[in-house]
Length: 605
Ligand code: M6R
Image (cartoon, rainbow, N blue to C red; front, side, top):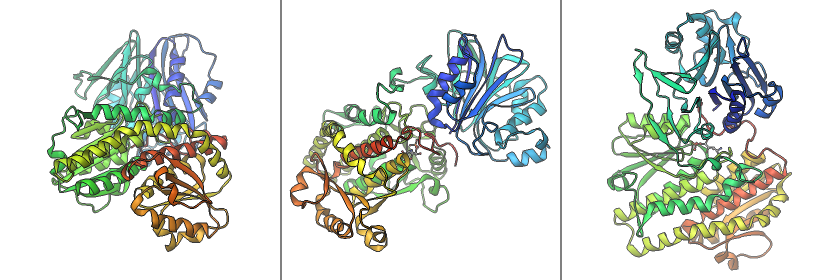
């Protein structure tokens, strides 16, 4: 979850601070850096609770000195949020930053009697103390020796006091990416921090140690053999990492959705056929499995739930959807007859990765739907479909969701035609609806003032309910997650028909409710559920589509979405809900992009 960086070269302090700002979305409860320049006799450490902007206030005025340094933005796991627990941690000659969790830190502390040298409550400091205990002037030998004792996940970036011009790194599961340019060498937990130097980078392989010196890098395995880096290039624009004039990344990312959808359509639809040929996915993968198992977390899970509905509806497939964290310990059977689909924006979520590894062990064929190229999950999966939505920086996922949805639509449509379950006409109509998406989605963005106005009514509300049936319900699960994670309003999405079985007891005079009513066959039933809550005093906003408004009586606030056929409405509904959540959060004066307690990349179980 945490962001880590290591740099050797010109303007070291400035580069590390700027890099940390780009990585801050990974964790932002404390920040720190350790520096060594020619002017310094020892490594100097600056760290504090808070953001990178707080760290900037305590580091000495920037100079242009070249040097060597490591930095960290923290998402606390072991030990509270305080200056002392912030990274880097120093023990004797060793200074390091860490992303991940050392599961056996308590055992190590006891076994190696480290209690007296530890000053923080973190698992990380135990590693620094152990390294220092064994350090004999040979960094690689010491790192291998200690790494063998560690259980858990880690990306460790290490400096040794007596080797002031080198940085070492090793990892297990948690990512480290590396690049060089001219006299500079840089590593980070995420390519976002590297774009300032290069669009090409490599992932540090597990079971290797990286040694960075000015402008050069060297990787060796445990036997000391050199390992050649495998460079890859990202095609994201460097400017796409910025806010492009928007106050928050989330707004920018919401606004980017029509363009991202258009890009995916152009990529996957050729001559009015859906093709995954470039991704080298054979047709059999789309139709020959008895069972599909979709696994993901959070927003990606919600996209998977819609995927499940489509695959069942169009391709008559048997599909399970599970939370990755539950799948790991569940009895869901996957085997060689299963197509396992992992969905993840970052491609680094540890639960999703763990689930995919388990599915592979059971013999399943694994397909991943990912946004970040070269991510850990991409390296494990048999096949990958990329959403290529560009960097998503705001913690609240927006464009990742709609682009994941689109991949499921394309996949299900293609599977349906390959299985002979969808006729030419029906397929043509569906493609026609998909092609309308970029324009229809742009229209929702143009409604942002109207949505903003409606959202103002709930800024002080403690609770909010969202109700709907079928696809409407599934998209509301995502809408509710958006509102709760960035506005801190307790929001629950309910299947409208389920309300009467308990939850309606919570509806009282003035309770805000968003009711999604876009699915024609469910219209009558959904509307009677809306009337039931209205009769109990709920303050209802109806999210519906222009083709249905005639059938709805007055007395509601209405968000009228453009008319697409039923199956395609989720793209429009979610954009409206994203904007709604965004405005509530920004009107409350919250940090929209960095909600409390969260981090963008969840690399702990
Ligand atoms: O990177 P991933 O798609 O695997 O992340 C999964 C979830 O952590 C993520 O979608 C999370 O729920 C978002 N913050 C929701 O906005």
